[in-house]
Amino acid sequence: MSGPALLKKHLDATLRMRYKEKQSISKIEPPRVLGQPRACRLRPFGWRPQTPWASAWGVIFCRGMMERIIDLEEGTLRVVSSVLRVERGDAKPVSVDVAEVAVVILSSRTTVSGAAAVLLARAGAAMVFVDERFLPVSLTLPFSGRSMERLRLQVERLPMLAPQLWQQIVQQKIKAQAELLDTLGRTHELQDLHVALGDSTNAEATATRAYWERLFGPTFTRRDDDGVNPLLNYGYAVLRALVARAIVSQGLHPAIGIRHRDPFALASDLMEPFRPLVDHAVVAQSAGAALDKSTKRAILEAVMEAREPISAAVQRFVGESLESPW
Image (cartoon, rainbow, N blue to C red):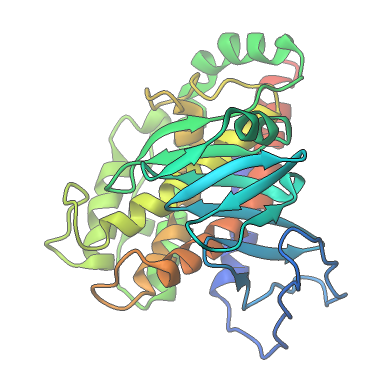
């Protein structure tokens, strides 16, 4: 069984955790000082925080150790005394432990010093630059210290495995879409679609058309720049960054993919089954919701729930698809 087939195991666990009835739990106290780690209290297995603490510029999640997504719409990232510092206008500068940073999201109104970029890269963080439509225009990833052997295997094996791998990815994506529609009480027939080898019958496109219609109505199109599309673009940009970061950490090149042909093709491929996590967060927002601090917080929470399953899935993708003996 190849690597992407094992995405199902981790995706199912994530979806069950997100879609199940929320239980009454105590709120997490916010850290008293930004950048200062705070250990999680012991909780029953499978417990997840319902109310993450959010600052004005980012979100902190407590999972044994903290990892942050920093969303800096305007301001400056610089290094002062070997410490990453966030500066925003007249507000008091905030120091951040760079070891806790997973992704930094930056716009045209932000400035990043060279020292800050180097510090983030050495810590393994990804930097995403977005345009006015919240579409990613650049993704900066750190180099991995892994052997070039994995890159050689990626170049040699992926073209031969591509039909089987893409078939499994599409199957898992459609299954995740169907589970979200079931959760929302929307009728559908996605379970009846057959995915051929390499998706030669284009079942993914058929499923996606029906999925968007059930989710956002018959007039919805991803080509529009308004409505929920900015929210979806934002969530997918962060999700792609997390997947690309996991790919690079395993010594692979994100541009050498299975089906997509963009600069981060493999990340675009492997993120497909996780897209409904973003969709669920977006559809939960009120009609006409803008991409503000509140909606960003909800979307980032959904994306961060996929962080650990993504990392585990990419590791298994390497082990089962690239390094397993033939």
